[in-house]
Length: 622
Image (cartoon, rainbow, N blue to C red; front, top):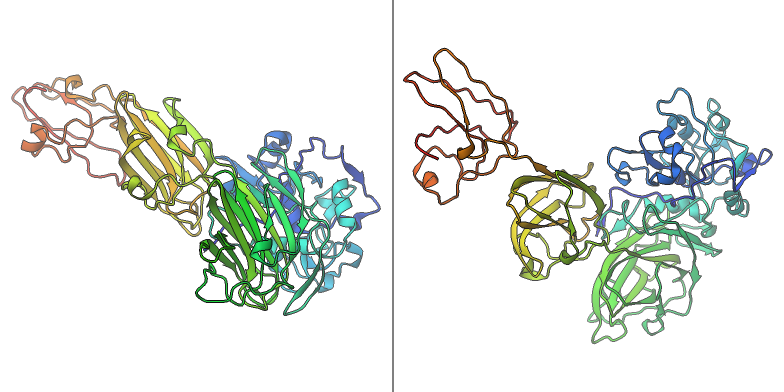
């Protein structure tokens, strides 16, 4: 179990409105009290682009980035906040802002903590700023709201059209103008506990939009929470370019025992319920409890997996200060003798907010029934809960046989995600090219043309493990490890770029596996392949000739970048001569005929920290 360092605050891929003042917009000139949204609702306005103006000119082709992170954006693009590509609000452009758009600091200066969306009853004197979102709010029953009038120097009218807001947003907020549980979704999502990798960049995400009605909170105490269930609508997106599908939650009961587990047969699925009336499920320490305590009281679900896929579970227990949330995943759970633990995870408890959101991902094999046990760490850890189950789409190049061929020369640029990838090897099959048998990646292949190929692989994860490129020769049913290279991970930046060059002989096939160090080292990636031109004087037979005459100088500028190795490891020159620093060194050739005079050669290799320069002088024939 790891703690994700790059989290998602929520937000769906919004409907694009080319004319923000048309369509489902309604006039609210006399209803400004209804457009103080919780700040996470503004995630719908975050889109990738070169500038605010550029994004708004073509919303249909812009990529949503609801987390606010550039890692969700294509190369060379930034995540632009407060655009008009969202469906709920219309922002005004400030002429003093380069590239257009409102002043981001001005907008955030209106973010204040409070317990109501109603500006008429919003007490600015008792409120505190929350420019970073709900994490800045410390009082119970508080959310972080935008467009308040608490900053007298920045009225909302200066950056947003206050006469228009989406009809959908009005509908969902007018029925519950006080702070509801949906406003803590941001806090829950920013305290994520996971065994997964890139939670920000997952292809199939569960997001909470401004149009989401979740649990309306009746009361909170230091030991338990009473939550009244209303309608829950959650948005699922299979990828950034697909339309969203709204899904109604299902309220469950009567699943206290394994034998009464509720079957979830279609994904995605949202389930709600309570564990307050649940009883203990295990009696002996000799039983396989998969990390659950004998005191735990929980409920059961079963998932009959028909296809091999990566399944994601999100479990939110609405409990405060009474113990950690606990999730256990089994097969044959109802048969004590055959019960097997697939994995378990826990989420931290807090005295002033709900438990962290627990996120767990695993590889579900085909034709296997899985059982999920939702509980807490002790008999007191019970409450209302929400369970979201989704699946990650498996990449088209998940297996060697489906490798994407890199055919665009001299360069190809590819991008994608490892999130839905499945493990590629069992045991020793990986040889030495893969660090762990449970790592999972995607495949490419390239056919050599007798030139040097350079690969650059950027895995956009933070603190989840090293990136890894494994290169194989042979065939998919008989892969031979040729080489592997890693890129270091960092806790505050994306992984280093893996850069590797190799000579691809004419007609040679190379299989390239892009992966990470661990099961959870997955996320968005970029791959660049470049073929270097072979220099005209790459071999001895093609050496450039010049005359070494008295008092005359010969000068040439060129490159060794595309040069190929000149000697075999077992060649006589390598074995008998001290002229060769390394048999695999690659360079270019010149030749001249002496005239009895001393010759001076100056050679400058313009390389930084790539190794020593090497000059060799031979006589004789090639």
